[in-house]
Length: 378
View 1 (cartoon, rainbow, N blue to C red):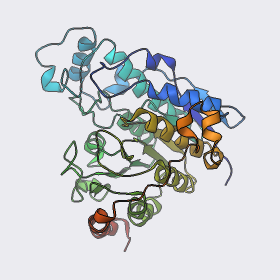
View 2: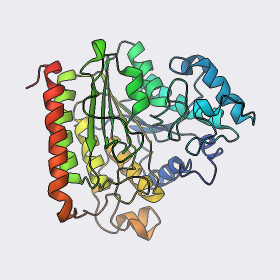
View 3: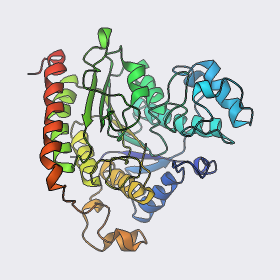
View 4: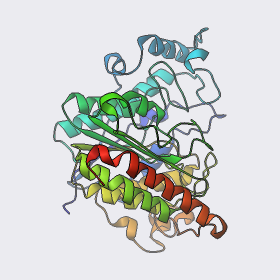
């Protein structure tokens, strides 16, 4: 396969504004990823480049977000937290208000729009915005550390240009804001693999949420039990997602690459390694479609940074992620990464494995029963 033209979208301006220290969302992660991939030579060469974002305009944000909400968000960032702010999800534990929140959200959102524009202009085959992935934000409210839904805005940019879009979300949390945006549309296929809403925020994303109207059959949810591990996660992707992506045949594939599904994340309960993320990205690239990838969750910072560095290495067609023991520690200037970018293989809990397998297989079977007929699959 020919190495794709790959664009890493980044600005140091995104690190100048930070969530409060009490909030687990860390805006430094993309800069840390950039530093590491730069040290590995993964931002140089004729097929790789770094590209600056621009803030999303008010008009662009109003394609999804209500003007009243945007105005409340802007005022909150200036220290004017008014009576209706809490009703809109602002000034809460998961969506605190802080100086510059509006500007930060607009720039992170604009970065994903820029990625979509570069794809539409034929300037790149792959774009990665590690500062994006705010998939919980709703039209009139903030939620789950998310204020402006860049995934929705980028998908709308692509769809408004006549492109069929498939969104594959592997963040551990269900993409409720994205689902809300496209629930009644069939020009955007939304697929989410996530920890079940029975055990994790936002409590949505069950298999029977399949869309409505002409969008019926174009929302796909694969809820996963606590303890889900690489092998059975890959099985869910291979048996449920790959056939749907093949049948849908999108013009562009978007990926939300939250790394909070990795084992050890403090806010979730899955047992994955970054190997499954890398393998899924590799399989998505085999479709030969342009890919727009974003960051997302990931609250064990070092694991997230390594996972996104690995993701970028696959997205840009490098083989550095397969280098042997010792390479990571040298190139990445840390003894923690002595084995390179890929995680060590984890042994699943043998006592829970059969239970996990049953739950995941049931979800796969439900998706195949409920969704496949809409796409002429059996």
